[in-house]
Length: 258
Image (cartoon, one colour):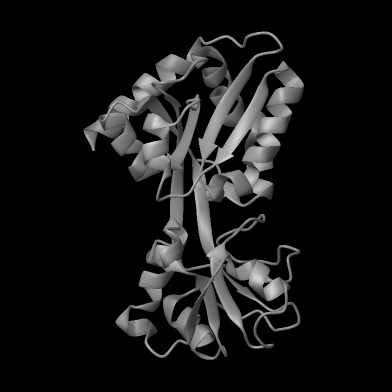
């Protein structure tokens, strides 16, 4: 994967020296919901407060974001994408380089009064999901990457017998609005602090991360669009977003910075 290291090297060199312009400037950030809902809004607000540079966030679907980065007017300055899609953008000159941002985990959710099952191994996860009355997950027809991953997981032979139900939207909000009975579970992105040991987080709906060997996570990256109108402020925003100062902000929204 030599191109990844080339892209990261270009990215790092581009961001080291870029200054931040004065107030009244604006940058546009295009991002899928997985990042916009996982700390981007808070990071953008902190950047605006610190620099005076306005940040406009455009939330885009996975099915359209690649084309929109290349063609939409006004063009985005900063691009946020899953790592493999960002690599495609770099190879096709859609971004000038990129840097890793963080990892979003797909986890298991429950009703608040239900006991927290042990899901620290694949057999234990399967047993917990088979005992559920239903397992909600985002309909893959929506084009969501995490929905497709959840759908493929439930199609595995070892997960046969689980009563999966695709829904519009995410599983955690569905459980919160009262969908399903007391034994209902859901698969979806984790937007709260968490850890691989799945200790209590304060969120009564969250069971925890799925076992690491299932690979149920999304690695995200950020880069500057080749169509950017304000590359200096775009670089400054990326530096700020991946700075130690913002690590805690991402963590509170479920993103583990590398």
